[in-house]
Length: 221
Image (cartoon, rainbow, N blue to C red; front, side, top):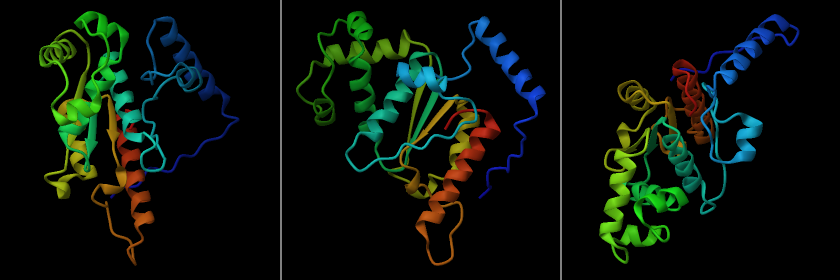
């Protein structure tokens, strides 16, 4: 398990600061976005989107909507033409696919394009009943054929022992991912075991290893 590199800097090194600012201003004038939009105007205004090499942890109690929120981030990344990978050692592809399609079908532009009056209910999709299959097929085809970007689902429910940081790195390279979501990180296989079985320390090492991946491939995780 590799650790994130130590960063050393000096706030008085103004030459580097000005150079980075100048490069950012140049990209902005060319219309090139430095960060991946989050889909929330307030966050995009203050953060500039999800920035390359950034590691973001989403915390909350069970049932507070963390997985829906991260799936929405992935959907919005695809909507903006990015290649997103969602890794989950906990949820099946069917669960994530249903959430993704519920979120996508709530977009007013998508509804107009495929002729929907309202979004698909997640529970109906999960239970495979109570919705119009032809309308659902139109949605699925439209998302694949008409919109930019890709949204890759990588579930480890059948092989949890293989959902490791190394596996995620392999897929980043193979699929040329621009944005990675891991939900949840505490169920990944530990990068190394702590003395006495301190699970919080092991989760910390996993987070550091994911942060290192983000910096290595210059993508937000």
